[in-house]
Image 1 (cartoon, one colour):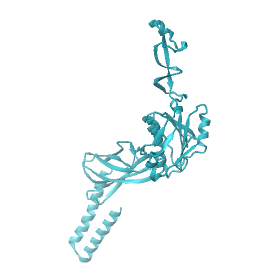
Image 2: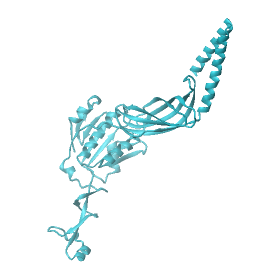
Image 3: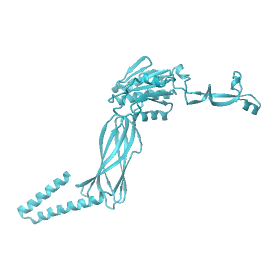
Image 4: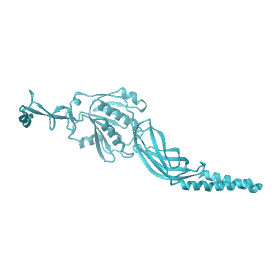
Length: 362
């Protein structure tokens, strides 16, 4: 609109000068300028509905303080080229409420599909929603344009950087025999509902474990060896509530501790109060898939949803029949405690050094 106003003012000044000085050349130039405006907007009216735009994010997971790639596929159904296109996108971090704008430029040949790629720096953890709000289609001169609104959207996740930290798993946690729906594929146990293997009878085996049908079939004593359930001796509590300014550091600590437990083959629960569910929820983490699932699920907690109960008491009330060995409590002031023992208050500026210099004994 500003370009059009400036152009009209310039054309009017040329026409005024043509009248004042009686110049035929200036008069012709002013009329040519008016005709050019009509031609430019006629071109834009033909082109405004000729585009089909799709927004894609090839890799939907990025690491904090790294770049992620945004791809716009522009299909030009007209035989006319578009020498200049401007795309207006907006983004929102659904976890922290952070918002911003992105503007991209491109072009498109007639009857072609163009791909416009851009790398965007992401500096905060969370689930981002990216929306294509509108595009500006310029005429062949690049002076005039018409806008068209779009509602395309896509989402991607930004995970915290994974820093090394030390975890010492005690014998009590290593041999924890809690209830679980996950069983060991190598170690025998006492759960009669899950069979690990049927093998030959050995000295010390209980008579109750003899598999009589199999023994009669092979004409020697065979025993049923049951599987051992893999319990979760550790619960990592995320007491984040309403403070969001230090969410990146908070998640960096949580991810470092959880991944260190995972590296030590220590299955654990991650628990927090969900504002969406209005209840304490937890997720078992025992491999990389469930580790990333925990992050994705936690990112669904939107800004403004806070806990209204004591997290530890709420967990013990909901899961009172399920004991554990050690609790790790991470608060939103970045204080970590293990059991009844104070551990450390972390600082965002030194988070990598501090994580590498501490050991969590569980």
